[in-house]
Image (cartoon, rainbow over all chains, first blue to last red; front, side):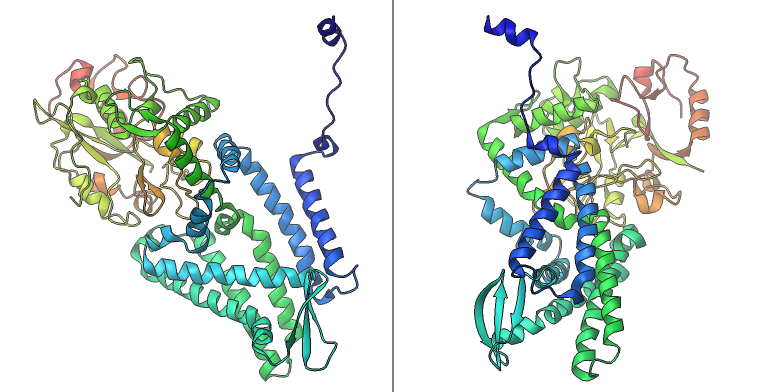
Length: 362
Length: 186
C-alpha cells in the first residue's frame, strides 16, 4: 500500500541548500564574499578600523574571486578532474598527506629534481609571493592592524584581538614593517633568475611564449619593484611622489590578481591537486594492482585503470580490442608491442622477450 | 604549406637514429620520447618505429585532470606543461599506444611533441630529419596523396587509420606491404 501511494503521488523533492542558488558559481561567490564580510566585521571591530587606503585591493580581490571561481568550477566539471577531486578529498586524511604536502607545496622536491637553479628561483618566487599575500590580505581586510596606545609601543591586533605589544624599535616590529620589502626582494631575485634562464637556456628558448611565460614574470617584477620604490620614497625622499607610485603599485597588483586564474600563475591555486593524485595512486595501489592482460606484470591500480576506462567512455572512446582486452589493461611495453603487432600482422606482444632498451642514452 | 609526419614502417633498419635525434631537440632535456621495436625478435631483424601519432581526439588529453596536455594549432599533442602536470599518470593508462613516459623523480609526464619549436615553422621534427631509410618522412598532404597513387592500391588498406589505429591521427602511417598484399619496390 505504501509503495503504491508513493508511486502515484508526485514525490516532493528534498529541500537542499543548493536550491537557493542559481549556479555553483553563484553559491561559491556568495559564500566566499559572505565569509570575507563576516571576517572583516570581526577583524575591524565592527567596521571601526578599515584602512581605506587599501580599498582598491578589496575591490580587486572580489573581481579576482569572480575569475577564480569561473575558471576553477569549469575546470572541476571535466570528468577526470571530477573523479580526482572527489577521490582526493575522500583520501585526504592519509598518514602520508602531511609529508606529501610539504614536499609538493612547501619545499618543491620535484622541482629540485628538475634542476637546482630552477628550484632556487621557484623557492624565491613562491615563498616571496606567499609571504606577501600573508601580509597584504590581512591588512587589506583589516584582519591585522597596529595601534599605538602607549608611546613607543605598537599593539598588534589580529581579528580584533590584541595579540601582543611590541616595542616600535624592536626586532618583531622591524620584521613587520619590512615583511613586504623582504618578500619583494625575494621575488625580484627569483624573477631575475627566471628571466636569465629564459634568455640563456636553449631549451627554454625553444618553447617559451611571451604571453604565457614572460608576462607573469614581468607582472611580478613590476609589483615588486614599485613596492620597493614605495619604501625608497618614504625612507629617502620624504614621500615624494608616493601617492602616484602607490596607485601604480595598486594597479599592477590588481591586474595580476585578475590575470592569475587564466595564465601560467593558475598553477598556484591548482597545485594541491598533486597531493590528491599522489594519495590516489598510493591508496589504490596498496589495495589492488592490475595485472597486465598479456605479460601479467602489475603496472597500475585496478581503480585507476577502471577510472580511466570510464573517463574515456564519457568521451566516447572505447579501446576494447577483439583480442579480448581493453587497451588500458595492458602494461605500457605490451601496449606498444601490441600496436607493432597490429601494424605488422605478427603477434609481437606474444613473444616472451623483454622490451629492448628504448633509452637513447643507454 | 602544412606538412605531416609520415611513416613507412617496413623501411626501418633499426639504426635508432630517431631515438638519438629526439634527445637533441630543444625542450626535450636529452630524453628521447620515441621507440623502436623488433617485430619478431627471436627470428629476424625487422624493426619498426613507434611514436606519438598525435590523435585528432587524444585520449591522453581527455583523461588529464589538470589540462596539462595542450593541443597545438598545428594539431600536435604537446608534452605535459611542467607547472600543471600533477603526476597522476592517467595519460599513460589512457594512451592506446602506450606512448607517454613518466619521470617519478620530477613527478612529470613527457611525450613526443613533434618537436613543436621546429614543426610549427615547417621544419621537420628531429626524428624525420635524421632517418636514413625514409621510414620517417615530413610530407605535404599532396605528397602523401602522390605516394598513395604510387602504391596503386584500391583496397582501403593504404594509409592506416581505422582499423589499424584507434582513431584519426595527424601522423599518417603506411602499412607494410605484407598487410597490403603487395611487395614494395624501392
